[in-house]
Structure formats: structure tokens, C-alpha cells
Image (tube, rainbow, N blue to C red; front, side, top):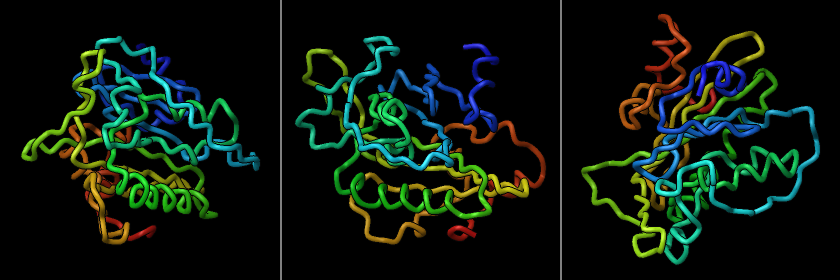
Length: 243
């Protein structure tokens, strides 16, 4: 994919991490991993149409992403009876201004296997907290990169092993979110979170880490178009919520 196409996407203005295939949707972008049969990262601007007040119903039209070669593509059958949710990386509730905007979030390229106790509880609370950050009057735009982390010191669980497509999808041990808030005065602030893919009991803020830490854990470069001493310092911080 050429750099001109990538530069035209507003959510990619601060950087586009490497991936086997970059999928440009209308309202967010995904970096897909052929090896893991799921996204390496998904990057969005939360509520990109803030001036639109309508909110459509969640569509729930989960489906494969046929832009991905079949031998690397997850299917609905991989998740069926697996015990794992099709967990959104880009949240459906962040993109509910139109049917097409919401529908894109249900492509399986935007999904990773998540335990129900994680997906429906702490991950959802983090998504809600980020929307609250975005609603702060001093915030112009909120950029979020979400993705899986595989801890190879833990046993790897596979789903879809017995399906006809011959593909197995590994279950991530952890998930991350890296957040970049652009304030109306031009200041940039960063937060990062890492959460284990299991039932969690601590408050959301207990899972804060530095952006640098997530880069090491997930193996991706975050916000790579931003350079300088101030950015390096910001990436090393563990900021208070949402200070």
C-alpha cells in the first residue's frame, strides 16, 4: 500500500505501525497479522463525527473480512462453541453515527478472542472511560490503538483447530490500548493500558502502564510520526486518569 493512501487517513496522521496487511476502513484502520490470524493493531479516532448527535442501534453483523487471503483469514466458525467472545478492538459504541460506520466494526479483522468475563466487564469499562476522556471540553480528538499481546511464557490456547478452514486462531494472553489525546491548545497527552485476558478485579486505572512498555510488549512502534524530547518523555510516563 502506498504512502499516499495511508497519509489520507486522518487516524494515521501520527503514525502507522507495521503489519502484514493494512486494512483501510472508512472510519478506522487495522494492521493485520497473517501469523496470528487476527489484527496486530486497530487504530481509530473515537467518535470521529462529534457534531452528529444521532446514535444508531448496534448492528451485530459479525462477518469475515474477505480482503484478507483465505489461508490467513479467521471465520465465524473459529469462534463458534469456543467459549471465547468475538472481542472488538475498535469498539462498536465509538462508531454509532451511521449504519455503515457501525457495521465496519463487526468485521472479524477487528476481532480477537476474548474471555467473556474480560470482554464484557473490564475491557468495556476501559472503552467507556476513553469515551469520557473524549468528551472533555478541552479535548479536540482522541486517538486509540488497541491490540493483542501474546505472552509466550504462558501456554498458547488455540480456537478453530477442528474447523473445515484448517486455520487455528491463538488466544491472546493480554490486550492493550494506547491513547493519544490532542487538546484544543495543541498539547498532546498519552496513556497506555495492559490487561490480562481474564476476569479482573482491580479498577481500570490499576492497569495503566507507559507507552514505551506497550511498544516492548506488543512489538510495535506507537505514534512514530511524533519525535522530540517532549514526546520521548510523554511516552515514558504513566499518567493519572485522565490527568
